[in-house]
Every structure is written in structure tokens, then in C-alpha cells.
Image (cartoon, rainbow over all chains, first blue to last red; front, top):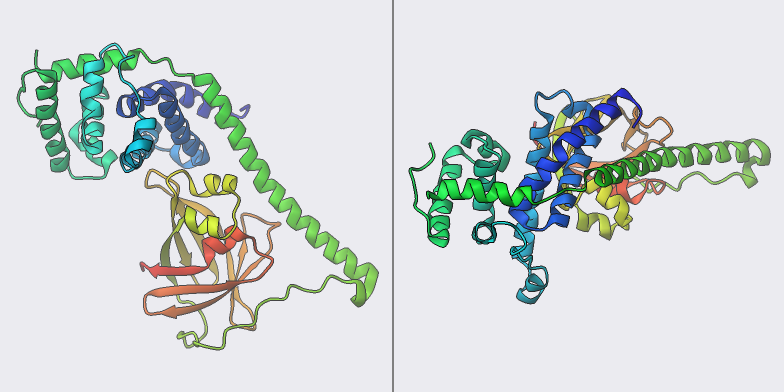
Length: 163
Length: 209
């Protein structure tokens, strides 16, 4: 896009897309789907660019949209009948740490999102609550339960809870 | 090792193994955006062409050759709109439009994806004053974006007539309405309006203010 506005958007796209795709990938464990979701979120950002460009952190808006699309997609896939779900099952063996990928894939959708946003994106609980549209205490509950379950499946120790 | 350290390291390693195809995806976004812009502009041109053709027919062919005016549906006789003056008061209304409704109305799939999105639902808000309207949608991210706005009038049949200020070539939209308590019900649109207009406008809106 040749306009200054278009060039600014392109810059944001290039800056946001890799990180956004990786965040979504850690939730859905499917590169193609992760790119589709990140692309959809950034396309919506383009449609609302005049508004979103005025925000302090446009990338936070795109992340919120992407995470919500990803959550709906995980929930939609989980609701599919057994055989169809198996057909869409994504193997996690091809990643460098398949144990972590498999353990995270075994979490409930909201726990999965909370874990990825907390441990990979380093978001504080307050921001995770905003992204997931729940209270901070709900986020802490998700993280608490997820850590115990992950510790069990990974055979690691559970440290102190997040504050 | 604590589970926190294991998670941080494992997620970072797994994420780093991914090489997203950023440029190809940016191209796809640009193409999709261009198609949308062209589709909107094309819709406007069709409306202009139809208006010009109608005017030409009237000027050159007289009454016999002229295209008959839109057979607008008759105004409903009952129930009578409860607003004594026959006007919708200054108010804000909301409803959610779904993919299923759009499919049932015959909206093309590509248009549904463009306008409603992948999540299958589009929350809408309609603000009305005695002479203006603003229609907004939540296209994702809980951000209400104005989709259309313009002027409001009422025709001799009491129908609400909205004229877009954002889409100058678009024709005005006349809709039959009634208010039941906290619900605004739009029942009929003129036949010249497309299926997406019907999906967006007709149905029940709930009052929020």
C-alpha cells in the first residue's frame, strides 16, 4: 500500500505477524491454522485501522482478537464428533519440545490461553484478564489449575502460585 | 526444574521452530482488502447506473416506457405504532446478526465472511435521533466501529426512511417499524434493498437507552 497510512499498517503487520502467529500456534499446534488466525486478526485491524492506529498499542488489539478467534476455534474443534475430531488431530511430535506441546494441548481452552499468554507472552494477570474477558481471580484460578496439571504430566515441581 | 521454568523454556523453543510466511500473508490481506474496497465501490456504481437508466427512460420514453417505480409494500395497518407522533424517539438499540440468518436470506458466502466474520455473529448497534442514525458493529476486539450513518425521515406511510451519508450513491432505505415495550421491530424493507440490508435491518432490536 503506497499511502503513508498503508505503509504504517504494513510496518505493523510485519512487526506483529510472526509473534502473533507463534502465540496462536502454541495454543492450536497447527502452523497453517495459526497463520490463518493471525492473518484474520490483522485483516480486521486493517479494516479498523483509523481507529486502532490511534491506540497506544495496536498490537494488543490484534492479539486480543487473535486469541478470541483461536479460543473459539479450539472450542469448535473440541465440540466436533469423535471421528471428525481425529481427522483434524494435529500431531505435536514435530516441535522441539513435544512433551510441553502435548501437555499444553491437554489443557482446557481457557487454561491453554492463560498459560501461553503468561509464560510465553509474559503478560501480567491483569492484561490476560482483559484479553480473555474474565476477572483477574479467574485468570489466577486457570493458571493455578493448569500449573498443577502440567506439573503432573511433565513430572516437574510446582512452585509458588502467581500473584 | 520447576514447572514454570520448564514451560517458559519449552514454549519458547516450540515457538522458535516456527517460521511464519509473513510476506505471503500480507499480500493476502492486501488482496482481500482491495476486493472489499472494489466491491463497495462497485455496489455504489450499480446504484448510480440504475438511477441514470431510470432517469433516461423517463426522459426519453414517457410514461409507457418508463420503468415502474418500486412496488413498495403497503404499510402495515396493525399493530399501530405506539409512538403517538409516529416517530421513533431518540434511542439506542442492539441486535446480533448471525451467519445462519445471512445464509437464509441468500447473502453470498464471500460477503458473509467479509461482513460478519469467521465467528459467525456480528453485534450491531443502532442509534436514532429524530433526524439522524448511526449504525455500528463490533467486528472483533470489542471495538464498536461505525458502519453507516446519515439522515432519518418518515414517509407518508409512516415508514422510517434512512439515507446514508457515507455511501452517497446508495439509495434510501424505507422500513416498516413498530415498538413493543423495549423492542423495536423492523418488518419490511423496500424490494430494491439487497439481502444483506434485510439481514442487518429487519428483525427485533433491543433497547439499551
